[in-house]
Length: 166
Image 1 (tube, rainbow, N blue to C red):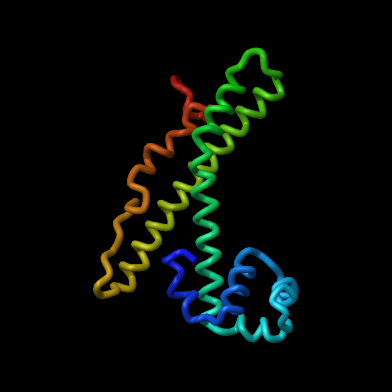
Image 2 (cartoon, rainbow, N blue to C red):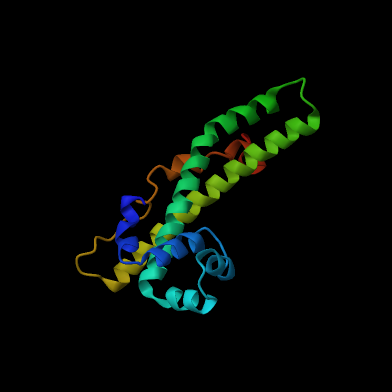
């Protein structure tokens, strides 16, 4: 078990630990209860315990982080492949269009995510300012993504309203 979740897992009995791992991976209560040889009622009672809930949440976050890292590692190769298809004059028109669409959709999703991160950062700054929480440094607008301005220019060339001379 990874060290960062050790504090959430250490306080659980072995069956609870296995149940938390299976539940975090998306198994149903019925599936988990059968796999562990326990009643569904016992599993429901375990799930009510804050320690088990924290363990499930921590394990889910770990799974999300791992899959996100793997996806990010594949991005450069995927972009290179899609760009090659898009620029290949011998490729079918439908394939070139699909590659172009995938690249534009990915860029748009990335742009939207950066804008949302900036909005969340701005809202957090406003909340901290309103609450005036002692000892909490108020984040400045855009601190979460300082380079977001560059990222937001990704689709400028695809936007007809941004065309030169208009």
